[in-house]
Length: 263
Image (cartoon, rainbow, N blue to C red; front, side, top):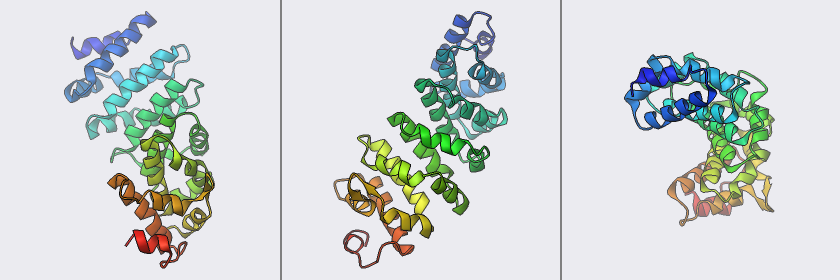
């Protein structure tokens, strides 16, 4: 089927045919960068975003549109630039206000892919002041919202201004309990959040020392994540967290956990 045909089906007056067209498009673009580029050139993105934002669209259609957009974002950096030019981020952030969890997760997955691209300005996360508190509230919804939101935060937290915004909106309290999640991906993304929050930031580092998670202090949890049986990525990131806390003076350098582990 030609790329043009996929795009034409998005304009069919029958909503069921539009939904089937989006599903077929989703299957056609998986792992196919040439097809992704063709569909973008032919104007698929504005139409997908329109369908995603239409109140008359079914939740299933909206969710499938978000999935296809996420797949397009996984292509080249030029693809991501095209998506940004079509104002994909405000549309997806608006989607997070939906009551439907599957749609929220699809929007977050796509946002994660767009924000982790080097061509996306981090500032786009902070443009609307209501976004960060809403993301904090969504952290409790599912392990997928936890994984994607933590990944977005750790990628978009660049410098003291961003650290302060996230800190002031309760990032430490909201993310700390995720370190004991049953999901490795959630634990790992939460840990990465703490490493970027604490980097060269005495205020955050001093706060982390006294945070309790399930009756255990945060530095002790970081030490447990340093153990040899843990994946290397986890060991290195928890070592970063402890090192940043040390440099900020939050943990004494002769503290047992530092002497035995980080050196």
